[in-house]
Image (cartoon, rainbow, N blue to C red):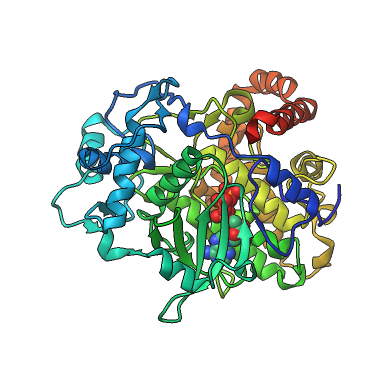
Length: 484
Ligand SMILES: Nc1ncnc2c1ncn2[C@@H]1O[C@H](COP(=O)(O)OP(=O)(O)OP(=O)(O)O)[C@@H](O)[C@H]1O
């Protein structure tokens, strides 16, 4: 297992900071594209009542654009439904939506205020009560898109970025180039310009990201300032002066003392609690990784890149994707094996991320060694000293370190049912002994009940299988047809 120098996770789309990632990574990026599950997902629910909820931000945006379908119609692009059937109307809806954005639309988006957690077991009546809140209404909660976010013209974006000059390029991902810019009033921004993938992939990414980010409002979520749809698809975000966590953790790491690492771990946990439990909708980010964590001036972390995010209706147990999307090294076994996505997908990725903060090692190193596989035996023997990043020497708070290591081991549990919820993670990190005792007790009883299951799981999904999956995935990504 190596320190530094390699990509953080093996991603078919891994985003990176321009200055810090190596050439090998760039090769991966240029070949690999993020396969979109949005066109072929199946939405698995045991008790879903068909059609009641939109399944993703795209659903809401399409919903908004449906009323404008007659405005613009353009044959050509199409998308598919959850069964993979082609939907020729999708292109029309998207075109209608973009047309509407260009005009400075009266599309109404609702800011999701924080609400008490509503469990999946809540009655149908309560779920139905929530529905109108999620749809355009006149309850005063709605805000008008154009009054909240700026619709930038292409010339404004060009002026801000010196014509998208290479000197202003601060990051690249699987779908986007990110440019530093200064608006007319002097505000510094990051302009994310979708440049890679097919038109459909870029549109799906744009709609997913816009559809989530305009509805969320939390100190640990990246802030949207506006958008631009002239000459391409652009998102204008507040600039994070320190770039991404990946750029610092695998760059000038001395900036990251223990206090900052702990602050980052806690802030990401709070952001995820908000996404999972604090919004009216359950939002699964699906791509939590070091390059998707931006750092504000005071190193407050902000979760960014909602291109893969999914909304889950309350009564759905999980969502199933049939195409792989996401980043190797950060994804849990049930995702590899069955395509299952729920909150515990993010919990697992979060566990990997805090292991990176503790160890200074990447989720996958250059020889495809998994950080999880390396750290698990050390965690189970409580060999904290062997885990800790040598850069820290012994400059850390031992209690906080123990809690972080314990949290990591809980979050990367092979079986999703044994992983804590993010609200429990937050409490454990803050030193809440009662929550820790409850989680441990709960784990023990689950362990007793599912011991045999656990054994068969362990046989089914071990490191060999992980590497096989990795190999298979790489083959798919490297297939020439993917670049066609
Ligand atoms: N607001 C911002 N401030 C500063 N840097 C940013 C900002 N947004 C993005 N970046 C930089 O650009 C990189 C790529 O951005 P992002 O991850 O959003 O692109 P992407 O194409 O959606 O990536 P992915 O391949 O993960 O889907 C980030 O890792 C970060 O280094």
